[in-house]
Amino acid sequence: MANFGTTQRIPTCTTPSCKAETHEPKKPQEKLYSDFKVYWPFSLPLTSEAAAIRILRNLENLGLYYTLFLWIILFMILIPRHKVSLILLVIMTYVTTLYCLVLRAYPNSVLLHRSVDKRFVFGLLVFATLVQLILTDAGVYLAVSLACVVPLVLLHAVLWVSHHTFVETEDEDACCCAKQLVPLDGHNECRTDGIENV
Image (cartoon, rainbow, N blue to C red; front, side):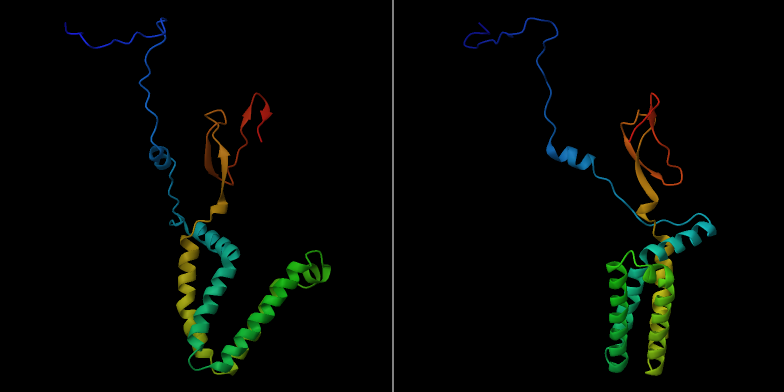
């Protein structure tokens, strides 16, 4: 009488390996949050040599951004009173930009890339800009902007860990199936059965 009015389902599969599945599909947010990784590009160097190497590398890689930051600060300081210095700064910026465009337009030019060192030309343009700013009585503003910007640039250069110092490689313990980040200096190729994986 307890089963009166109810129907029982008979399984269609009679083998013992066939059991009712209790698998529930994963919710979409579970996969989304499990793949989330936080990248923090700042860290303190362990030694003074590591700090010096990091400063040199960041000045080489991010020098254009540091220069642009200095230029914006100097530009904002010169806007209120020194119109002539501001015009000369913009003209020298235009000349430097044209030189960079010519370098990029002719990458195989022997004259532009081998005969004349581009560091010499950039140094000459910076020296001419400094002389023009000093002659137009904007030397004090240049010194103030350098005193404000240089410590910030050096602090950023010491703390910034370049993402170019790491490469994504295969994990050797998991038979080249899992990827991880390793330093460029210790990069080892993963081999399986004498064949090098690419």
